Length: 159
Image (tube, rainbow, N blue to C red; front, top):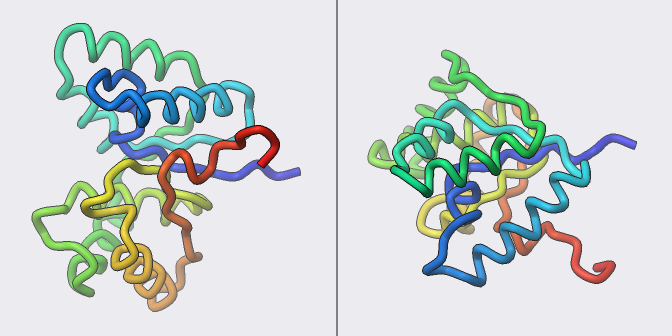
């Protein structure tokens, strides 16, 4: 059986150690356990790793340890990803100010992931973005992609 391909943006990784948001941190840790159990094929982009690299001191070390505890495929930004991100901006889904968010989305789409997992409710996990990305993908020959927050995909008590 084919596993679901999930793309983790940096908001998910950073919430592995987000003491000021314990509920989100606990949900993220629960998702991480499912990842370690092999329930998903995980994809992370160089954009996400760069953003995590901006963390300093202890938090960076903790997040690096978490990343080293799982198997993931690294997506390197390509011209195709940049062009799709630009189309997302041109279509008005997000603005040029959210270029990194567009690159996250485009990296997941171009890599044929099934789901983008994010805690970014301001720009990514949002009806306007989900509908706009679906439209841009269809207009440009890409598969549709789902966008969820971690609690929407973790399997709790058999649900």
